[in-house]
Image 1 (spheres, helix red, strand yellow):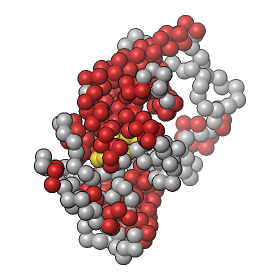
Image 2 (cartoon, helix red, strand yellow):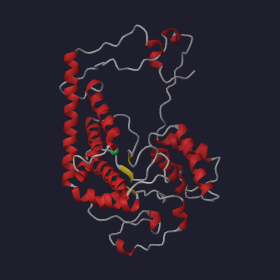
Image 3 (cartoon, protein in one colour):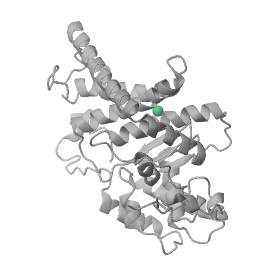
Image 4 (cartoon, helix red, strand yellow):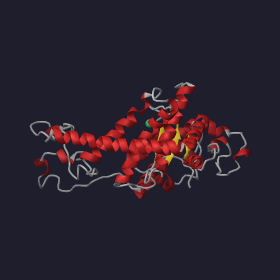
Length: 346
Ligand code: ZN
């Protein structure tokens, strides 16, 4: 038998003699992912450059099913490009598709909308880059995917099993980066509704910090049930969650508010101090639509990045002399979509 909610099972089910052996299946770690990938890769013809270990390193948080999907999607990308073998390039495309959602190339965005999105995403990326213990920025893109107009993807360098308070605060700060960047460029009245999801996530994290994770000094290491727990099977009837007093509820709200305010102010300060980089990154996004960690590094050093791999020679060299970039894109890269290009491993 399998369940995702062992916490709400009827104790009678769990009596000795019934399910005596419990196996917890968590997400695979890097070695597990490599082995899972190898199993699924047996079914597709691979080109020689494919390294399961490299893909495993770049996919923290992927489940076994995600990895199966990754192999499948990359085979589809190869088929669509009339390739007989699945290469690293296809795995990269498939990874982006799974992590960020499928591109909606048919969606037409006005130039203004694109610029807003570019600033919004650049705001996330820059705050994320400059906050301590934040996951590194993996890619920033203003190609609409799913319901999002743009994406800033952060990817941890290794598997994480717990998070420090500093890491969580940094996350809340980078979530506000998008909204603040809009405000800085469009003014108070120009901001869009694009940040609603960011705001929701930031609020949820801040609330969890106070009520669940014991990360608010004022409220202390207590669990505050707010009665909002989802009703599930046996738990629905009779057993009410103990709600907190009105006074405590007010204190919680105040504490959540102060975390949010503090993070907002931090993000605002960072973007204010780095306005030149914000402008540069937005400009780079307008030009290339998607930029990777490599190009973000260049922007943070204050210089305009080289074009992405498939625009030039595919190697995407990190040279300061970016003026000689020959503008003859290889047609196989173009067909594969605007992302393309093998991952930069640095
Ligand atoms: Zn956002």
